[in-house]
Length: 417
Image (cartoon, rainbow, N blue to C red; front, side, top):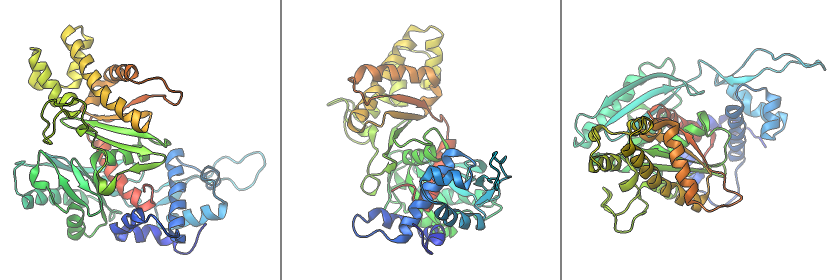
């Protein structure tokens, strides 16, 4: 289904971040033709991301739409310089006009992805196929700095990157290492940088820079980035875990990103796994974060008398275990068991089956992943629909920057609900 509004939907969506949010809030009434057109465009472009450079005919088959719909969806994007046709493919024996694969134009407008963590801000120009074209990073000099000072650092970092752009970016996506309100684009809280609380980061950057700006929780941005550019490509169900000093989680279920009301979902690190356990920085006791974070690992290494416990991390732990340290082997198994309880609980409730692991724990490599997978397998009862897969994600920050950029793509193409 297609109408005249469809060719303008991308541009109209980017004019106001409220547009896509309004679509998400509508739970009743007729679906407008422009929304149907946006949904069709999202399906087709998601197919393009999944398949790589692909002809119009193949995209029509894959997205299960007719050729006229494909033309109506893709031609405006070609005219806008977002997509470009490649060289003709070899013709088949039946002759006919050779197909020309479509892909994202190398000189298309980039996206500005911003990664706002408790101690620093990173920004990057990200191409539509996920390449990092430029980046900048500025640490916060003081985590106790007033909000106006922290806002100035964020703005300065983003401006450094924007000055390197050859074309005005499509928009700005911000992945925040803390709870956010996805309805008004503000930061709800960050325990390690308390003065960021209440910052209307989306409205602030949009006002200062004049670019459509979207914000979400960092793990949810990782889901979007993994679905567009990474190991979530082509999957309808998976979970992302981000493990450092804290534990973040996000879910992609039945082809949709799960946010919860105003972005309240995904706090796996603050689910209780130990009644009356250790006090968590959130104020509650027995949270998963108290037994499966990097901080727990270092505290446990200290109590075991392991050398270098202050600098202990998952990579070092695995290296020591592999080299034959019995203490490191015991600690690795204990950590894997602790984290496995959180994964098993999540699997029992929503059964994503696939878990992509990002953050410091990913630096432990496949040995760490195998240890966790073994413990998860022992905790879960057999079920014919259970087929658990743990996938190694990014131990650094690149996936976060791509995910932040993916937030703009998601809103632009109505990829997520």
